[in-house]
Length: 445
Ligand code: MV4
Image 1 (cartoon, rainbow, N blue to C red):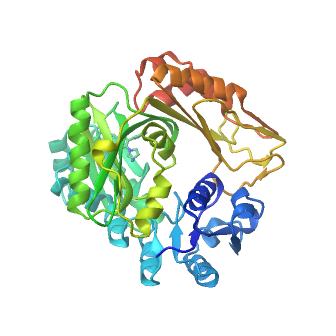
Image 2 (cartoon, rainbow, N blue to C red):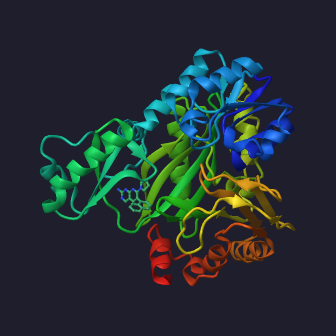
């Protein structure tokens, strides 16, 4: 059962989850830190509970406080959103043990995917193409391993992910020191020094595949997203479908993702992350959460991923079949941050004037309102602007139009950067890889 849902997050995604609950007629419990009393979704939820101080380690990451809030409010389900506890296997396990529903896969799957070595081993076993590499922890003769893979290689922390705990090694002379440094960092950041190595792809695209699975073995893919445009591992613009990949290559990887989900009895929404290089996909990680960029997929499929996650969590069977899913047009999302346009330093503060763009094909997911104070304690995402149109060029023009219409005053934002990026000739042609944005931004400054 799922008769009342606790939203274990903040900001735009908390509001996104609340909206899905309203449409499903599920009563909601908002939890908030002392810095977040004025959040939009807190005002809109049926109930709200303060779970601790501004520091997220003591509030949004505080497992006992959240479980207590569920007990106190009588919530029997929880949606973790993204970040915070979304991929914390201990949290999922405690939710399971309390007899509550978790809007995500089992704690066991979260655990397996959280360790990037076990995730890759599982991926390989179930037929996904993986990046060539050590296929386990680095052994006693790293030089031999690296030589066999061929330089450049990349060293990654087994407990890392999302770009944390990685180091590129170009030659054997740097190998030992790089391993030592990365090991020390991994131990202090994740409490786990385990490392693995991979062939380093110098200019791949970052493509991910969205899947959806229920507990009855029904598995769907919802196509792919191109998330190559990133800065310091923070995605900036995402789009769907990806440009320049043949339908045949896509179908092949989609089917493998579906088979993989069936093999592991995956439940909920999930994302397979790949590097795409030289017309081939290579699995790197699987995300077991709803992702920031899920709206581009929603825009071209017409499906509500958060609602479907909640339906799956309460034990319903997916009614849609793969053949009913159509990819309709093209969608682009930009992440609008409260940050200085040149330094990218977060710019919290009071929003004096907020005007959301509108019109055909425009969606905005944002918790902003006039007078809202962006607190300094959390990430700087203040809005996601998503457009859909019949083709990529129409979507691009529409997104620029919407960005020009949007007003956020009182704080700095990256609105202008988005307008410039969308007018960039490489963006227009689709000629970009994961390095493109950082190189371009360097050349601007
Ligand atoms: C890689 C890679 C190239 N080769 N792995 C970054 C996020 C995390 N999910 C994995 N990431 C990468 N893994 C191999 N074998 C390139 C990235 C990568 C990246 C690496 C260094 C600096 C910036 C980057 C931006 C996006 C992806």
